Image 1 (tube, rainbow, N blue to C red):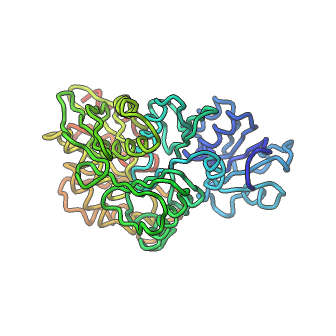
Image 2 (cartoon, rainbow, N blue to C red; image 1 turned 60 degrees about the horizontal axis):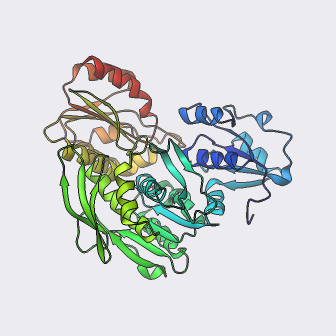
Image 3 (cartoon, rainbow, N blue to C red; image 1 turned 45 degrees about the horizontal axis):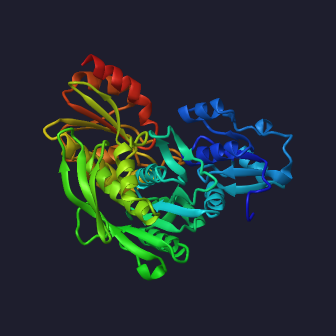
Length: 460
């Protein structure tokens, strides 16, 4: 399939995923009939239903619309679905176009000047910051985001007719980002992850090098300092960014924490300086993300004023350093961190920002394979906490692996104040523990504990 112009009906297998839901919203807003399946109801599937999209939760082919013409119908599926999924099997046997989510995203994004944000972590924040800045420009931008932007209350920004740019999170899982051929690209990080897909880090590096080779002729690539990729693999002009390194093309100057608890700084850019930038969103890690977003926005033609304004007005992404509760005694932050390096960065940012405060972290490991592959690294990151709680593994798409439980992380930790608990046991621990900050981390359903945690904090 070369384009989507003839498509009138779109069915999603796994419609509740963050990337799938953005595509569902896109097709709905562009006048197509949209329906889909997901395993369980969530806040996101509820929102889709409220927007007029039919969603069901039983894997039953009787729920698939029968009045859609196969010739102008598209089925989109996520690779997280098992091969024996009944609805997926039904579509495989029918004369209906069946494409992976990544392929469909590529068909949409490659029609415009794509801005692809890649990396093993940090993608969602950098892409959302970039979209927030470019939305300040006269022509605006479109965006497919990997989280719900608090500025826009959605994971989709529809491009105006005249918008030249479309921002997309370029996901390395299942090599999805190889469907993108962007004009601008950024790589935030290159850590070992998704080893169930890649096997070892060398294969991940190869995939990223293939990705940067697909940048359009005359395009530009932004690399975080320290990301080692063979630059001969791309014809793009290469720039670097860093939190604080004068060797980088884009970096902070005069970085300081102001009296309101947020960072302010100037941004060094090639041949100049963007002065008096301020963040109203916390964390040193997010300053680094802001430099990456500023680099992309500058290369896309945004002015210094537009970059400055976009960064100051950035409100964050749901589940990315997401402050859920604050009073005079306690603070509660929820974060999507699910890789050891993400945990380390998030915990370090909290400890740096709130010095002398005692941090109780609750971590829900995501995937048996990731827990197995990085148990020692998870243990080292969690040792940075004052108190650590580890919940059972969230399996997502995986079947259990013999001998792999949260206990293999727990047993390698050196921290004395550590607890291996189930979700129901959290209430008692929180009621009877001394702490200043609660930090929940994980890519599973740990955020479902938020209301309970908030109620406990209100009474402490």
